[in-house]
Amino acid sequence: MKISMIVAYGKNWEIGLNNQMLWHISEDFKNFKTITSGHHILMGRKTFESIGKPLPNRTSLVLSNSGFEHEGVHTFNDVQEAFNFARSSGEEELFIIGGANIYESLFPYVDKMYLSEVDFEGEADAYLKEIDFSTWDLQEQKEYHKIKDENGKLLSPAWKFKVWTKKD
Ligand SMILES: NC(=O)c1ccc[n+]([C@@H]2O[C@H](COP(=O)([O-])OP(=O)(O)OC[C@H]3O[C@@H](n4cnc5c(N)ncnc54)[C@H](OP(=O)(O)O)[C@@H]3O)[C@@H](O)[C@H]2O)c1
Image (tube, rainbow, N blue to C red; front, top):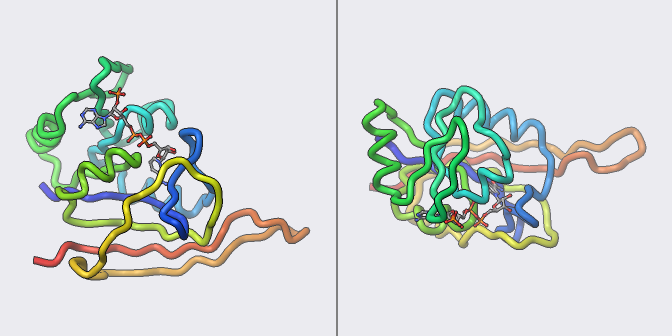
């Protein structure tokens, strides 16, 4: 089973504030949905609470040591048990979907990264640890322009989508 990570981060590696996302980019959400649909998604308890419900067409696995439970979600207090659950369900690509704590602790297991680099700089309280790309191969990339409304107000920032696989 391949282990992938999917994350959107700003110019200073910021990923969240007050347990919320820092921007709204509908194309990135659509992309996230397309990529993760039909798969097991693994997240920390705080990220699940930020989303608030199991995401449709995906099997939600939540890591928690505090006895967290929620309908429609499988909770684990051990990472390997979560991996084994997905593997034994026939999963071929498990997605780690955050947050900061989970990205950092599970990074050594990651084989493939789906990264959205967002043209954003601002207040945050959750960050991704800086990634050294020298041990990764870029597989694909696509650029998206910022979107403004008719009054020039920024609706969503520019972003780049990149897919990386770990070098052998
Ligand atoms: N930009 C993005 O792409 C993106 C994606 C996802 C999340 N985020 C942001 O990230 C932030 C949340 O990140 P966070 O670091 O605060 O929280 P988190 O990683 O979502 O969750 C942390 C919690 O997960 C549980 N946990 C972590 N490691 C565990 C382990 N090895 N075994 C069992 N349980 C474990 C613990 O839950 P208990 O306390 O219950 O024990 C811990 O408190 C939010 O701001 C969110 O919006 C951003």
